[in-house]
Image 1 (cartoon, rainbow, N blue to C red):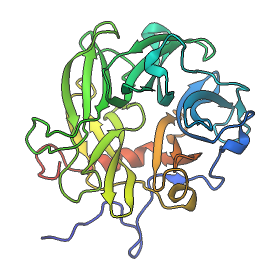
Image 2 (cartoon, helix red, strand yellow):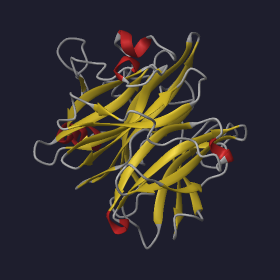
Image 3 (cartoon, one colour):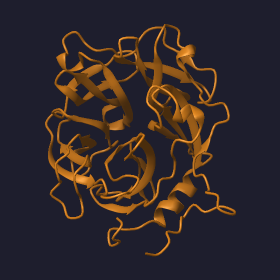
Length: 337
C-alpha cells in the first residue's frame, strides 16, 4: 500500500494548520456567565448589527441545556451575555422537555429573519426543531421538522428549484442503501416547500468504513458557507478508540446550484483536539463548531467551537486556504471519496 501524503505538510514532519487557535482560548467559560451554570459550549454564530452574535448551548446542574446569546463588537472580546436564558424549553413543547442543544443559525433574506435550527431533546430522543427570529429576543417556534432520532442540522440560506434544503443527521446504525456506505450515522439532505413538511430525503455524505477518522459517524458542524467555488461544508467525524470517541473536523465542497452533488471531500481531518482544554472536560477529545463567520473584507473565517463540551473557543482561517485545500481533495471518481 502506498504511503499517504498529507496535503497539509509543513516543514519537517509537521502539519500545516488551516485553522489557527486564538491565543486567548477558551474565549468563554461558565465563569463568564451572569448566572450559575455547569458548562457553555457548541455556539451558533452570525453577523448581527455590526458585530458577532453567538447562541451558546448552556448546561445547568441538572444536565439539561438551554440557549443564551452573547454579543461582541469584534467577535473576539468584551462579550455581552444575556442575564437569563435567551431560548428555553417551552412548557407546551413536550419534545423539548430535556432541553435545547447545538443550534445553527442561517440568515434567510427571503423571510427577513434568522432561522435557528436546534436539537430538541426529550424521552422520545433528540429531534431537529426550527425557530425564526428577527431580533434574537423573541422567537417563533415552528416545532420539530424531523422525527427522532435526528440532529446536527442547518438550513441553506436560499431555495433551490423552489424548495428549502435542510442538512441533518439521523442517528441510525443500520447499513445505508448506497454503494460504499456501511453501518453508521450519515449526513442527509431533505427538501420542503414550506419549512414544515419535508421529503426528497437522500444521503449527502456517508460515514466511511474501516479505520478512517470519520468511519463511525459523521455530522454537520457549521451551516454551509456560500463561495464562488461552491458550498463549503465543515463536518465532524467520530472515531471510536479503546479510550473513547475522538471528534475531528473535515471539509467537503457542494455544487453551488445543486447541493446534493458533492464535488470534493477531504480524506484527512483538518482540525482535531490537541490542546488541554479540548482534551479534558465533561466530554474528552471533542472539538465541535456550530458556527462560523466569513469576513468579506479580510477573507478571514472565524470558527467558534465547543471544546470538550465545557467551554467556547475561537480559531481562524483564510477562506482562500480552505478552498485551495478542498479543491485539491478527491472527487466522486476517487475510491476514497
